[in-house]
Amino acid sequence: MTDTKARRGAGRPREFSTDAALDKAVRLFWHRGYEATSMADLVAETGVAAASLYAAFDNKAGLFAAVIERYAATFSVHLYEPINDPALSTFEAVKGLLERAASSFSEPGTPAGCFMYSAAAAVSPASAAIECLLRDKRIAAEALLIERLHRGAAQGELAADTDPAVLGKFINTVMEGMSAQARDGATINELLSIAKMALDRWPAAV
Image 1 (cartoon, helix red, strand yellow):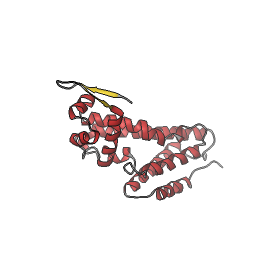
Image 2 (cartoon, helix red, strand yellow):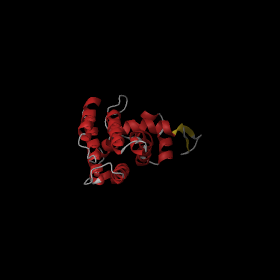
Image 3 (cartoon, helix red, strand yellow):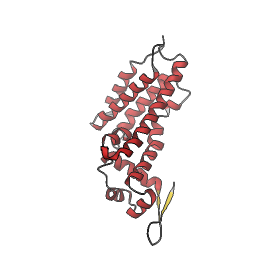
């Protein structure tokens, strides 16, 4: 666990666990969105003094950027593990991804849906830099999926007329829809049914 020493102003620098503070900030931003979360909210949620947060992250935007990286390194890594597993077929990898999405998006104890999608919906045009950060992460995740689909196509796992890029965007669209449904109260079983319906249209090689 990382400790950060905040050195703003006079007095003894305060140490705090960066990871613990970011984990709490992730959930707060996830629940409220970027615009609706104030530094006062973050101070109350993390238990870290405002001066210490400013010293460590500069401002709310800097803290949010660190939150995005923390989410990517924890929730996203777990979500995309099947895509990175060479022991799985391409179909099994995508099936695992969608099933993990259904579970993660409806997980008790965390806000519903996907942070990357939910946060983007709550960012105003005035916060263009924040939207760029979120978009870059989403594009990178989609590129990882499309790369896996290209490998599957090269290995003869997909129908010959399948465009891996379009298939990847379709799967990504399904996941974004699952996230929105989860935010509106869909259960894990309903999300799994959506995933199954998408998988039933898998373009298998014949």
